Image (cartoon, rainbow, N blue to C red):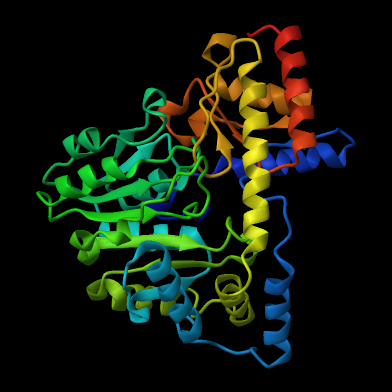
Length: 393
């Protein structure tokens, strides 16, 4: 039997999609399922964005575009970055890609190799570690701690850098915890990185417009000190409810841009042309739908956290960003993966076990509050009944 080469045996997975598939299967069998697992808004893509794609198709956007993306869209991304982060970026350093994961794959496989070390958040998005291991590099987890409100510690991060460190992955606002790292801590990290010029940075800022309680997102792109070694990851999926459109963008250091372009040419040629015009409409059109979504997420966030903290044996920090809560379930007596499985199979609640995001995720669940307030409350009621009636193994 033909087998893939060794590197492919090191690829991990993203269990959120397995949970989604099982939840869909149970629902098809007639079971009532409330999905608090998958990380996607329950809102439709705003109508003016959909219409922009339809118009592009009708106007003849049926062919290839340049590998790095439509120039108008790259210019709009540059204008957005200037307006939000006071960062002047040439459109020639911007690449439009089919989803945020593509930038992760490009940056990690371009910069990591056997003998190198890559720092990544734990708990964190599982694809980070998967791709690090795929390259043969050594994954070095940066602990993300509940007692620090799930923000990273600059001092702890810097202490993990060695002469073998090739890449540092940073994610704020963060998946799965909802943690947001404050500007003062980011300042400290950037100042410390000045002593480590051999370290590149991948800053995953896909949730950059999703912050609460008056917090402002601090982009690493706003620090000139890092410009020649920073890869910025962002996109349209979360902010404009466009997960299925597969639209992302990256900002690359100028000297790496041609290598990134060649990867695009070799792998996907270009991003879907009409989708790029939808992305343009998202950036340049009305933003009221984004504001409406964020107001709803804020309301749901409070319902979720208040409800979780009322459950026996559960405690939950108030997340400051994204649309995830990361409750501590250690006092329930359940292990995370076992609890997530039983909640889905016996209570009809889809959640993700904390260990799916790293070894430091044990003792936690990820709850996505990208669902209606009514559904969230129903899930909390089911969760309470489950914990009251079921005994841990």
